Length: 532
Image 1 (cartoon, one colour):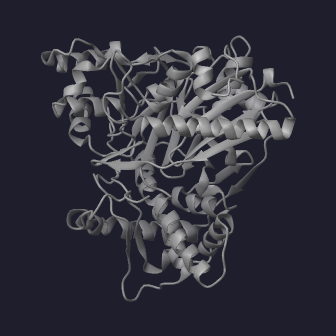
Image 2: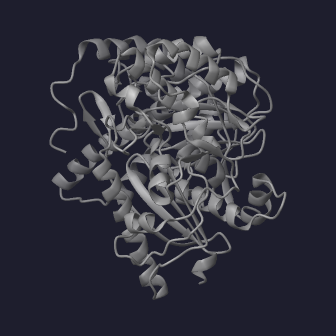
Image 3: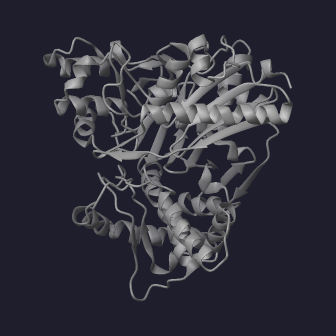
């Protein structure tokens, strides 16, 4: 294998950091990973810089070990690389490069006032997790650190800065910091002026354009690995500087690349700790609190439905069932357990037998909840079977996504002809696909490469930056050079399944008042991450 023609993608996800090395034919040649978890500190979901640094190095070390074992030589260079991470959030630094407040992740729902005011100011929906919402909320809160901000970025942007010294972002990730003008391929100048005018009386000494990363488009070089960056990633000193880096992206952008969903009218759903649907559109849409307008890595407009909660509740229940299995002497590895539970869900009644579940570990913007309480509800005449219970868990993971997608299809007239899925929710063959098809009423396809996920998408973006021909679009590169021969499987729900999901969703929406009451009345007795 010629490592000088290989490309490397690294993605810092919510529960896992993963690296994928592709050969010159875009085939995965090696991988590495590291598990990690966020913490709830003083009401803020965060990761410490120490855990970010340690996790990144651990992942790279695991990749280098895999390369050595498979190819018999150390990993010293690649043709190009790129880094991506969970989208958006808030990482403000001062002029000395010191982080001013702990990293505020996408999971926080603490910026409702700012998001509402900015949406009205811009006439453009600003979700709570966007960086500009966090910044403006800090201003509204009177937080002292705001005046000292010299640089504001996201997790992907921060790692890229450490590797290259360049304060840049790919346009897809930048579109979650601040609205993008998809014609000029830069931050929206009118909205930037409105924001600067809004905060002028605060006298901070900076304008928005002074502190935001510069925007880069897929295919552009976004800097090169410095000697300091190489040592930061690989303290052994084996990795050599000089490697070109693609623009850093968020996990939404890498998901689009990984599923070849970057053309107009294509779409994908990424489902893991959170889930989100991305539909590439050909026209401006109305302002909806439930719909985010972002971009592809090439800058095309994308309608996004983002939900904070997807598989965390499923994982918790699976852990409970795993404990029971161990208690009766039937230890099951995680893959076997999840496969068994997911496949049992296929045997459940179409509408889950009257059961209900709310999977809200954190707040949920689509249903306008600032906090969450995982909640399972049934009536005395509900049919409580394992099959119905698991089907309810999986339907619950998709319910909020369906609410947002209905706005796109029913109110905006956006056509969804086919969805590509990727992420842990689709790992068990057929099951997640079939339930998502029942939710959206359209075929759902999963490619054979879907299990590689975001880091695979980032490695593809690095390959595009390394090998694209003059004038070759990202869409053409992926169509013709990456996915032309890739196999996929497709599942299409029948009418009974679609109607069953609709009945479940009707009950779900009608009973949301129960979830709201739980948030109001059931309070944390301690930090939920205590002791973990």
